[in-house]
Image 1 (cartoon, rainbow, N blue to C red):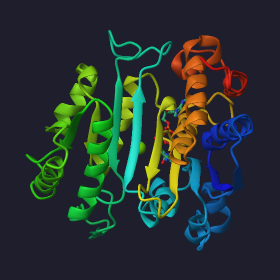
Image 2: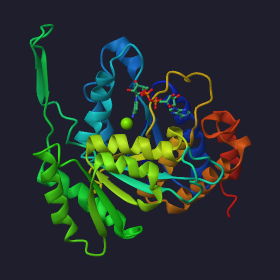
Image 3: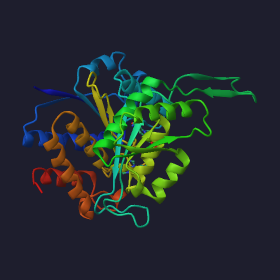
Image 4: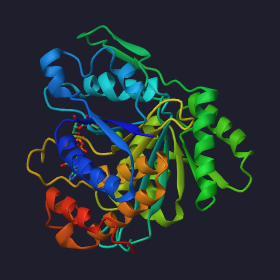
Length: 354
Ligand code: NAI
Ligand code: MG
């Protein structure tokens, strides 16, 4: 049966890395006999500049019919970041109950970590970020505009259902990995939502006796990513904490250009969305030098979720080989290849086996 994939390149380097992903997907489909159909959407800040909206009013309904969404990045100078984020990404994540943001980070052979003494295989962390509630809420307001008394209030929204379901996913992931999990908290400073988070996580942990887990304050945990990354495996975190931590784990492995993510609707009732963690990088856009690995690794996650493990591991092996040599990796990870050269190498490596 044909699997339909909606492709939203977005803005800046989003377009460049999704170009690479599409070429690689075509090759993988041919090689592994996958029946994939792609439809591209120009939803972006460029569209906003022309029509005043990031996506059409029936955008969510259009996407609902697809098996997966592949996204580059959205955001561009001239359009406020909260407009681009809340006009496209956040509505998709929420309408499709993509309550898990699955963000792996690994150190690869060939890619230097900025951390002293950290080498290949030393970091293998999965950040499981809550993706539909928490600190990223529209509840609140601003008043007394322009006055000395000007005030802004921003409420965080946590629900038992929302915490439970993402905790279950993270404990399940920990069980299938090393059996270790750390839950990020800040219950000493944030006195309502974080103790609630801790209680609900503890109640879900009781269902996973095989997993050894503890809570850690986010500030100490951030330091640990830098000082003792080998001690960490699965990190369960709220929307904000997971957002920040996953940039940190990515940076610790060499570059944010490597980092992949899956916005998952684990029940499969709605499409899941796959996207590199990085943004549209206006500072390097249009130069053909963006690292395509974050997008390609996101394709690996998509292929796994669509039920194509062989194609997924074929691509992952090709990514690992490209990173191993400076002539086939980009400048952000110490190489001297451009986006097209990396893509070309990966194409030639797909199907090459061990
Ligand atoms: P960014 O991730 O776009 O860039 C941060 C730094 O990392 C820049 O120096 C950039 O050149 C570098 N970088 C990022 N990806 C790279 C890659 N693949 N290869 C090589 N270098 C790479 O984050 P920034 O600058 O905070 O945001 C730029 C725009 O992207 C903003 O409008 C922001 O809102 C948007 N954004 C969108 C996201 C999304 O669509 N999911 C996520 C993060 C940011
Ligand atoms: Mg982020």
